[in-house]
Image (cartoon, rainbow, N blue to C red; front, side, top):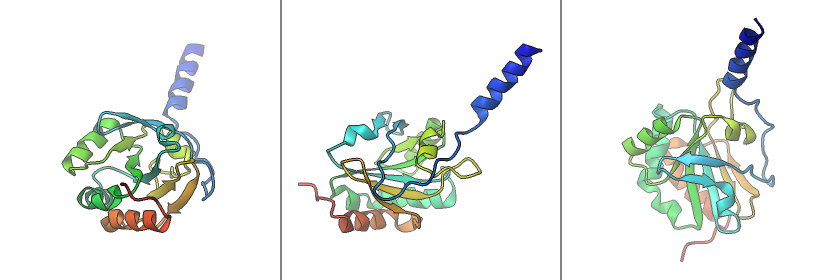
Length: 175
């Protein structure tokens, strides 16, 4: 009986997503992460420290209408963002295999990060009660501080809006 109770506790503990953290604010230090991406690489926020701005575009679910529109915008107009010294990612709590297919289907020429454990989503305060991420875009300075948070992302113009925000924040242009 004890082993059954322990087994049930273990299953419930593993199946329960992390509790959402408090919302982050501009000026806060962005939580570090190590996540697998659709390009087969693993990325760490720390890898960009003192090098370039990082943009994390959280999205709720691969293949949904608005997430597809956002991905298409970034794939079609990513050149607008790439002129800045910034690395940009879309990121969700979807499994890596799902995001890999989504990236391929949308011809994404940028990495889509997967956070299936939901630990990073929780740390960024974007995990909602349904267990998916709110659509939010975080702009993180090379020193690791959050420069801006867009809570009103327009999926169809995501690339244009990202580029405009990077310009407004004074992000250096690539040479």
